Length: 339
Image 1 (cartoon, rainbow, N blue to C red):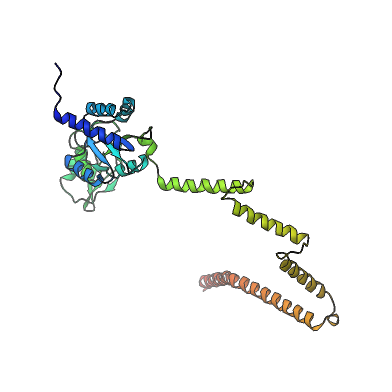
Image 2: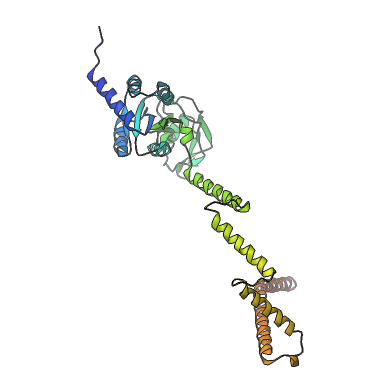
């Protein structure tokens, strides 16, 4: 006798198959520990970006097979999932999906039976709470507290629980009262499948700002290397041409080759050389035009030298003033000493 399948199970599998076929990026998330009302709000917030469906693993596997997928892929995605849910999206790639799901995470106070995700360390601090029964309650769970200056203080740093240990009694509640909520709840990503490639959360957890900065640095380094070895590309061509133009101009000037580009530089150089030679001659050997040019050059040089001297004096004056003040202070001290 063929067992009768409940209609809701058929509907669930059919819905899962549609989502598997529709998504360019598929993922399994773990919703264990997420309150029902919080889950409803999260799904509503993410509805425009992704579809989320909660189902039993057996039904997900059946839907995965019906969609023509390899079960080994789903088994990999299931790793670490206590209460799995399927995520399907056309809008987000794996990295973007990880970022969106990361935003749903929030800390909550630990309850008896919760496992510490890391060492629970309470720092020495002023809790800001007024005196009251809280002092005895904190001490009862191993947190040394006393009243100081009208408020409750934690006397020293203490590790109240090690990673992997189980919360018992009122410890989680008392930690929550001093602002320590170690249990992270949210839609925890177990893995994604995109274009046949499986991604783990560790691979997707990237600091995008640092990644962008590194990428810019690598691109700049590659560009400099390409220019230094004269590697011709569409990106390096403008820089290489500008460099070649500068070097060609320098060679042409050194060889005194006359072109439309070198002529202004050559004339300026010849003019400067002529003035240099004229400066060595007697004034009687110079005509009025050369004398005027030499006079203008001398005035410009004197003005430049005067500017430099003034800048040096202005920079030295604070030091001189400080020395004078120190001398006056020293004399004042001697006067005080000898009356």
